[in-house]
Every structure is written in C-alpha cells, then in structure tokens.
Image (tube, rainbow over all chains, first blue to last red; front, side, top):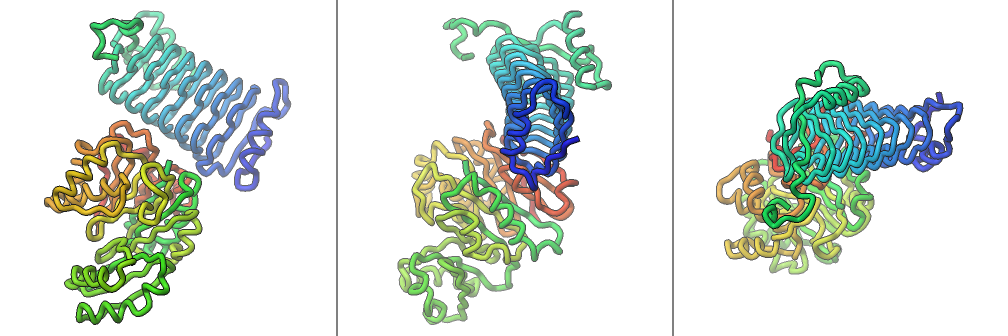
Amino acid sequence: MPKVDLARTSLRELNQTLHGLKAGVNETDWEVVNPKGSHAVAVGVDAPVTVEIKGSVGYYCAGMNKEATIVVHGSAGPGVAENMMSGEVRIKGDASQYAGATGKGGLLVIEGNAASRCGISMKGIDIVVKGNIGHMSAFMAQSGNLVVCGNAGDALGDSIYEARLFVRGKVKSLGADCIEKEMRPEHLEILAGLLAKAGIEDAKPEEFKRYGSARKLYNFNIDNADAY
Amino acid sequence: MCGIVGLFIKDKSLEPRLGAMLSDMLGTMCDRGPDSAGFAVYGAPKAGEAKITVQSATPAADFAGLDGALAEAVGAKVSISVKDTHAVLAVPADKVAEARAALTRLRPSVRVMGVGEAIEIYKEVGYPTQVSKRFALAGMTGTHGIGHTRMATESAVTTLGAHPFSTGADECLVHNGSLSNHNNLRRELKHDGMSFETENDTEVAAAYLTWRMNQGLNLGEALEKSLDDLDGFYTFVVGTKNGFGVLRDPIACKPAVLAETDQYVAFGSEYRALVNLPGIENARVWEPEPSTVYFWER
C-alpha cells in the first residue's frame, strides 16, 4: 500500500499524485500519515481508490470527491467533502462547519458530531451523522438525504427545497418552511438503506422523524414575507 | 481572517514552556494573518508589584534612563526590562496611577500597552513569527497567554491596531471577525468614561468587557452580556489575571477549536495550531458552540 507522509511530502505533491490516478489503476489503497490538520487533503480525487488519512485534517478535505473512498481517522475541519460528486467520505471523529456543503452525490458519514451548517445547500449527497449536528444545518437543501442519529441544532432545514431530513433525537428548532412530515414505508426503506450503507447498526429507522419542505416559499407570496 | 491562539496551563510543570508552546501555535497561524501579531503572557505576580508594558517607536531614546526618571517622579523603586520596542516597568502596586501620569509627562511618545500584576503585552506590525522572535516569546514562562495574527479589516495596520487589546488591569482580548456596531458602542462607552486609543472594533469589545467588569460582573457574566450588546462576527479569546474565556457569536462562522487535557486548555482558530501540544492525541477536542461562554479560572 503506497504511503504518503505529509511530514516529508508536500500537500501539492500528494494531491497531484492522487489526481494522476485513473480508473483501473493497480494501486487502489493509499495511506496518508501526519496530516496534522492540513487543509485540502485529498481534494479532487477522481478514481475508485481508497485513501486512509491517519489523523485530523483542516479545511476542505475530500472536496469535489468523485469515485474515491476517503477515510479520515481523526476529525475534519470546515467544509469536508464540499461539493462531493460520488464515492464515500467517512470521518471517524467530528466534523466542523458546513460538512458536505453543496454535495451532488456520494455518501458522507460522520461518526462523531458535525458542527453548524451541515449539508448546507446539499444537492443530492447523502449525509449520515452518528452524533449531533449544529445550527442552520440543511439550509437551502435541494435534494439528497441527511440522517442524524443524535440531535439537531437551531433552524434545521431553513428555506429547504426538497431534501429529506431524518433526525432520531431532538430538533432544537425548525427553520423557515421546514416541517415534520409523515414517515411512509418508502422513507423507512430509504433510511434503512442509508443506515446500512453507513454501517450504523444501533439505530432503527422507526426511531427517526422525517422533516422536509412545506413548499410555501417556492414562489413569493406577500403573506409569507416575514419568513423569507 | 485573523488567527487566534490561547493556552491556559493547569499543570504547573508546563509553566516554563508556556512561551515555547504559544510561539509554536502562533507561528502556525501566520497564514491567517500576516499583517501584525501580538501576544499577552501572564507571569507569576510579585506581591505589591505591578507591571506596566510600554511601547515606543524610538525605544533607544525613550527607554534610556526611564526607570530612574520614573523612580524619582513617584518616589519609589522602579525597574525596567527592555525587549525591542517594548519595555516592562515594575512599579509598586500603589504607584501605578502616579507612574502612568509621570510617563505621559516624561516620555510623551511612549504608549502603554497593558497594566497589571501578571500581564505583559507585546505587539507589532510584521510577520507573526518575526514579531514573536523580536520579543523572544519562546523563552517566556507563565500561567496562561493569548496570541493573535492579524489580517486587518476594520482599521489601519499599525502597532496600536494589533491585538491583544488591553483596556483594564490584567485584562486582554483577541478577536477574529468584525463588529458592526462598534462606532455606536464606542460613543456610549466614551460617555460612560471609557477612553480609546484607536478606531479599531476590537478595542471596543475589550473596553466593553472592562466596563462590564467595572460594574462588578465577573468575566463569564460580562461575556454573557456581550451577546446582547455586540453585533457582528466574533470569536473572542479573553485573558484575566487568573482566567481564560472563549466566546463565539450566535452565527459562529469564525472558526474555533478548543482542546482540554489534565494539563492545559488550548484554543486555536484551527486544529493545526494545536497539533504539537503535549498529549493532544488524547485531548478532548471540540468546536465551541455559538452564543456559549467558555471560561476557566485558577
């Protein structure tokens, strides 16, 4: 397994090496050691490889990921897996603000807690958080699923469009136009699939509540002026 | 952007290394703020003695014979320790007001950076690693300290515009963010007798806390009040003689990471700033919640 030591190799060299990998490459398992909170580790990977990062990372780790599986054995700073297209990003520790922001696809699993604005403007990504999430999460979320096994902070799903939000614990408050919705069999099925994909066994789909858009703010209506 | 670091030591055996750890943390935050840097270090107070940290653009002229002249003016022993553009004057605790008045008379070009029993403050324009080298931060000892690397937004890149800001005895504050109601608040605080040296928004935050604490509030309570009265983006790290506080505004978009072990509490704008601290692998590391006061006292 190729091992890149960020104490010796520059971040640019690491990212260039990872960008050079194409589908069908033989070396599919990469290890990165000594990240020490560096920014932009393993950003823009576009090949079905696995990158295991041994330690905590800074801003924007695994951004724009396509195809790859990226595992952070530590915590991640702001903007982890931002604009992810496909593949899987897994954070063993906590994630800072705007995890999975604007993600279009793939699966982001946070085994610890996520801070504020988790899944802001998500556009198709699936995000599963084992712990809690902070305030303003799923703000203007457009599509995809956000699963939270713990609690959600203030203003969950503010100005949400169409994403599905599943929360097992308490929601401190719902944002504008976000409401609790009926959990139908197809939602339980989606949720069970996501929990299984994320490897979470101690949470049952029936324990979650579903939240989503009331669709009142799609078009401007003077009666809703205060909510905008 | 700006970078903030802070270290509050719980285990006495680490006190000799405070400066070394803090300068390493500050160095990592250079790229968040290359305009200027500053730090406050709280050393062991000596009974009956106060320290006045002063700064001068012409230190050779201003600091020569200053101890003797001040001693004569206040009628008591005064010692001076010069570090580059700064000097720490040790005066009897009951002579601080007299000494400050005499300073204005004797050396009008000298600026007071901070006053207190434990605090020493150093700040200058320039690249942060260079600034900490000029003042030999790595060799300093103490119980707690805070530091700042500045990317100037609200006011000019000058020595006085650098952080930390100290507006009360043994108090100081560093800030990442910007306040939107600082002009109004400055006017109100001036009306209540507070004085200001700069147009900087952070100085208003520091003065606000001093004003609150002068009303009898402790640091924790003063920080709690600031949530109602300060408008804008902020992550604050605040030091008092025996305390260390952290506060983020309700939106909390300015980054902050706290770490705690049995030996210390550490703050960094980014986790990178904390990676070389002893035992960080096993520390409790978390992101401070918005609108939540974190406060440690010895």
